[in-house]
Image 1 (cartoon, rainbow, N blue to C red):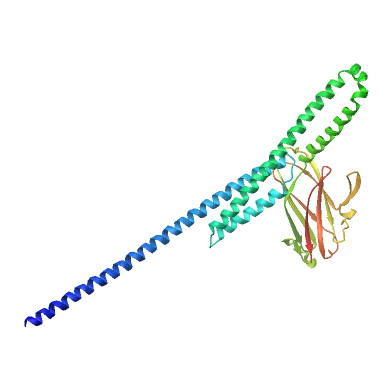
Image 2: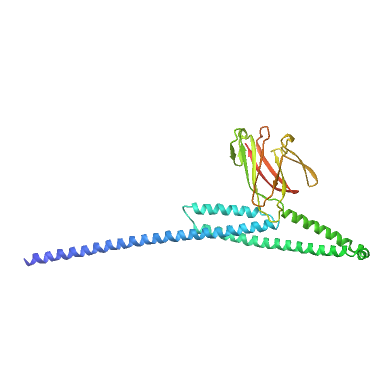
Length: 316
């Protein structure tokens, strides 16, 4: 009887030990799973915050680029490289927001590259400001010298030979300054688009068009805002050059000739506009009246004695 009781106690103790062991195992597994879930939530939150910080940095760089493009344009500099950089930045921003596998390391490298390019452009912009300031100061000095010379006719006669070289130099510098100021105030097309219009009036945008679907060609662009450009009537000439290098023209459809660089130059079409300095859109719709041959066509734009821009499209 005593042996049976001892055996029963042993079984009970073994059962308790097994139950405690199982409880410990299950507790460990639950704690471990909860910890992994918490770590995953923390990781997702950190990744979201990093994405938002990256997007904020890209927005800041975009704003800096806009400011530099505006200032370089006002100073008469070239903005093609800055505009290309802005277009790449917009593509990176779009990729960032649509990416399912966001890589912080990849975008940090891109941001460092953009920041380095901005520093380079700051140096170029400082040089452009300096050159414009020098030209303006020279112009003021030269105007002052000219005024003094004009007010002293008798004195001018006695020093005419000594100042002949200086006067010539003044004229050359004034001409160069005038040309730079005029160039800075020239119209600046941007955001080009080319559309093919078929015989039913349906438009198709792009850079390549099938010949049988092209009845008319529409070239549209915006005129950049420029505080140096006067709000007045402007004449914009459009030259469409075919794949052989010949200018497409037909006097019956409004083609003609204008003076460019001292030479008579044929244009395809022209348009008189009132420049409003508001980013207005200008459109040329040209009906050739015959089929377009296959190849690449260039579209050149002229105004105020300058070639102000160009684009192209392909007929296939």
